[in-house]
Image 1 (cartoon, one colour):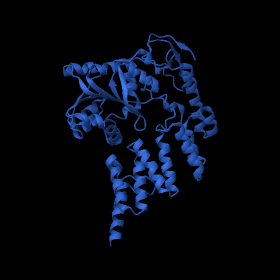
Image 2 (image 1 turned 45 degrees about the vertical axis):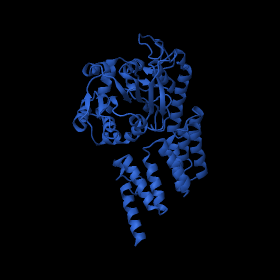
Image 3 (image 1 turned 180 degrees about the vertical axis):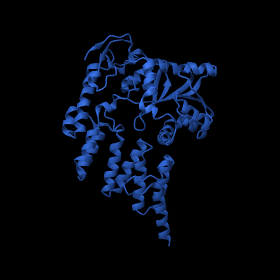
Image 4 (image 1 turned 30 degrees about the vertical axis):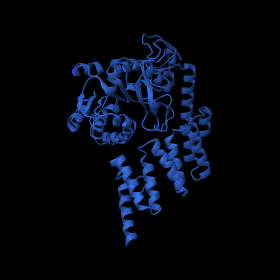
Length: 430
């Protein structure tokens, strides 16, 4: 480890005292930690960031909006509906801005499903912006900042600003959040999603196989929960609603000018460095399927308990049950463990408990396709064909593209199960 001399100041504490963390990496990318508040980030300038974002293979693969892109967006829509439902239904005719709107699919939902006509987007990916203007007829601007948009819209202010998977990409997120607030109405709110890199080092959604896979080059801000809260507070926001079981970490923010600087809490950088190092060891052991050694390196990792259950205890109901419950003791929001519990009870023909756990999974994450389908399968097995049809239709309503996709090898797709249920209803009637 070595200290870095630079004029770049920390977004959180405004100090410029950094320690190099590239020694932990395979690839050197100016990965650093602030020695004053523990904020983890990359020391890059805006030109480097823009060039990297344009040239990275992930973004090149999104050069136009096609079927893969559509599937991803359809998966997300159920999360957006749940997070925004109260706001979009509470008032009529909200003015809504989506910063980084892609094709404008969320704005289209706000307009078509909830009736809000005053919707505007900002999107730098020209092909996606073109798609949104052409397919949805949306007002999407290819500008980089709120101030640039303001010049085109006569300094318009909004009731709701959406900032989904954006803050992790931006230099100085505190100042960027202040910029958003400048264009909010007095009672306006923000809807923000951001990956919490540090709190999610062993997040089940990533299904991490290697430590280096945790690093996304254009995600320059490696937020912990504390540091994203600090970012919001320093910009004059408080979290009104928080969900971490759907897609990333989602927040509904309200403006709050009463925040005291004493509310800003710092992390101990030495402890953070130690935890990152322990995580690296844990992932290396986990990759080698040395689960006990992995737990010794990082004992509060729910993923190891899930992996142990699925590999070491494949046919041991009691041991699997203990592992999944242990994962949930560590992290009650670990949706994958909840799904596995539902599947475990399904395999043991305990349909009541299977439905209970799969309903919990759907409550935690509304796009839990396997849970909808398992409940439909159970009702089919029990001869409750109409209920099975209803659950298949619920699944298809959440994501229409799943209707023809089997969930199990040589199994039925939801559309097939619907047909099978109707065949059984006919057979019983005749």
